[in-house]
Image 1 (cartoon, helix red, strand yellow):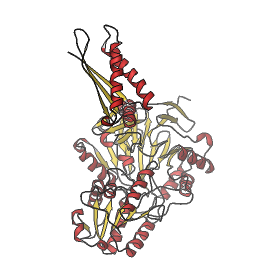
Image 2 (tube, helix red, strand yellow):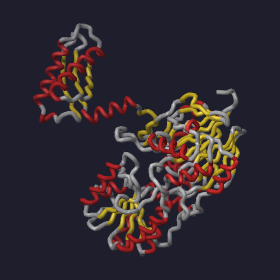
Image 3 (cartoon, helix red, strand yellow):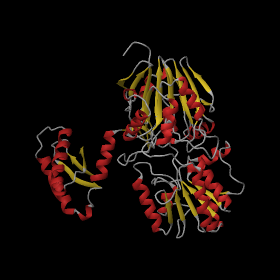
Image 4 (tube, one colour):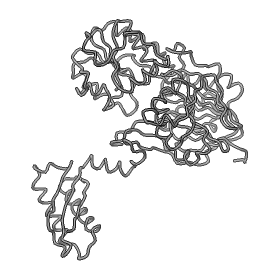
Amino acid sequence: MSKKQKLKIIPLGGVNEIGKNLTVFEYGNEIVVVDCGMTFPDEDMLGVDLVIPDVSYLVKNKEKVLGIVLTHGHEDHIGALPFVLRSLNVPIYGTRLTLGLVEQKLKEHGILSISNLNRVRAGEVLKLGNHFKLEFIRVNHSISDAVSIAITTPVGTVIHTGDFKIDCTPIEGDMIDLARFGELGKKGVLALLSDSTNVERPGVTMSERTVGEKFEEIFKSTKSRIFVATFASNVDRLQQIINSAYNNKRKVAISGRSMLNIVEVATQLGYMTIPNGTLISIEDIKKYQPHQLVIITTGSQGEPMSALTRMAYSDHKKVEITKGDLVIISASPIPGNEKFISKVINELYRKGADVIHEALTEIHVSGHARREELKLILGLVKPQYFIPVHGEYRHLVHHAKLGEQMGVKKENIFVLSLGDVLELNKDEAKVTRNVPAGKVLVDGYGVGDVGNIVLRDRKHLAQDGLIVVVVTISSKNGDVLSGPDIISRGFVYVRESEELMDELKTIVVKTLDARKPGSDWSTLKNAVKNDLGDYIYSRTKRKPMILPVIMEV
């Protein structure tokens, strides 16, 4: 590549995956970060609570980072902030509702006082450092106050759409500012990074108002108690549920801490309006007849600890699902969550409830643009370079092909992997190297202390269990003074496997008798592990974790 100064675009999250969105824009000695999200763990990440991006590249270059700019307030765009800000305390920029949700999150983690939050508005232009000018463009999504960001740099303007769809009749605020996208396109856009989530779906995404109409229809025709599970952060959806409840003379109770928090923030900031007397405490639901109640709950993804799952399994302290209840799951499954949701639905039916979910009727619309909307943005912006983001690999590939159809040259389209460094200017663009990127696992208060080895051990324990061998040996002559004692956890039930336990003790004794004089403890432990492991596998075809404990007295 030529020696002319270039802009670097580095995705540290949000490509080849859904979630943990984080994109780095670097020019000279300055960096601007767009979004800082998390994702939920896969099934094989046993015991892990959250997954956040690896920001070691940013920590290494922290003196260059001017700030983190947020597109909207969903967890996959703001959820990693409490963890990242501990090692990278930089200014945060976001719209009013986005910052309201961030503020509450940082308060929960006890770091609000040390954080620098700065409010911006759609239509505003923000100058950061010497090289970056950011313009916030109003877009529609499933949460209010979402924006795209046009980043003007010395080599040209780059647009990051964030999550968006085109909704001509949004619940709150105005429709997406398509005119501004067109104006920027006429001036010339160097690169477009665009949301790829729904690229496989033809046509356009329905307006959020269509869901409200469906709620109205269901609430009118139902005499039983109604439960609605949806994403806590879908403020517009929550507003429509409350509107339909009010119109049909029903009280609304909310279950789930995250849901309560978001309703509180959105109401305080004026993004939700709850008619007086509509909202009641979950403790008060017993005072009302079934036809007078709507309960809004978390758990639309079948999360094991969510309110809906606990209700389904009779584990909720305040609410019990009973025969005749109607449960509406107003969300589409995040890839990988289908089994969880299916289990919860089956359990709800066992309780005698009726269940309405997306597969049965239109009680959910996406917050993401479909093919025709994506084509419209490409047509308006007319970027020189195109980078699909916010999607799994297949989504990015389909979006890349769509970019070609819309006139972007094939060689100017980049399907990036995590950590790829794309260097570009008006003359050329090329992936030059790869920086550290990937997953950092959050387990309880531990951030990054659970890695592949720990996960492998957890999987091993979950699948085959654990055997502990305890032996006491004389320090004088090496005789076995007590044991071997065999303790089994998750391998076999000892009382029903006494014969096998006796055989294992015999194997250990033989191993100890065969040891060479002066053998160190490490060699002895390995011999016990190997001999026991071979015998157990030959007998059971299982490989439990074996921990020998040798004590010397």
